[in-house]
Image (tube, rainbow, N blue to C red):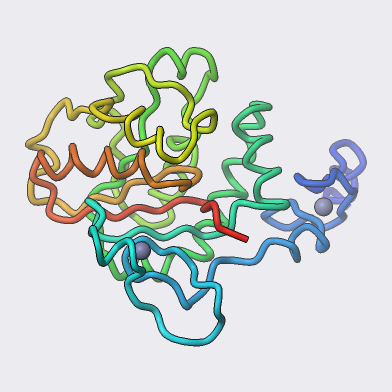
Amino acid sequence: MFRALLDIVFPPLCHACRAFIPGAGRLHLCPACRGEITPIVSPLCTICGVPFLTPGGIDHPCGPCIISHPRYSAARAALPFDGVTRDLIHHFKYDRKVHLAHPLALLAAEALTPSVASWDADLLLPVPLHRRRLRERGFNQAVLLGKPLAKLWGIPLVVNNLRRTRWTEPQVTLAAGERELNVRGAFALVDPAAVKGRRILLVDDVYTTGSTVMECSKVLRKGGAAEIYVVTVARAVAG
Ligand SMILES: [Zn+2]
Ligand SMILES: [Zn+2]
């Protein structure tokens, strides 16, 4: 009865298509939109997590990771950055729909919990925003995602150590080759001793070329972090 009344006052709408969904569940996605969201699965690169296009086969390091091992230990993303997932992330970041952090974190946790459990990280660090961008946007999407994930995974959340010290142009406006240069030297640790010998879990919303998390990893390695793992809700995938 109470539930039915709530549905009239606050009709549960699908976060993606705004369809009315009685019994919306924790994700608040209609069955059609939910059905379009399929996680990234094996076979994938054991290091950077890029999915291989041919189905079947086993996980193994991809060519680029063999040639040059990323500065992080391993990276995994829950979902391909397309379709409904891309719409949700765009609404979340650019339309300030901050409540979407919750379903996005749940979707990430669904796919990433086994990897995260195997890594046994000590600290969870969201990728920081420059304070000017934070002022413009009003929130850091990686922090909003990191909070529920830290709670779910039981890993302490640290938001004030890794800092973005230099203003950078939004990575989305740049070509792949320019991204690495754009973020070079953009991060610093306030307290390097706090990461020394620790296993760090970096959290961000989207992995595109990996330039941002690579640069964060460089700083964390310099600070003496033992391992650096990266999780993102989504990852840009070819095709
Ligand atoms: Zn929908
Ligand atoms: Zn790889």
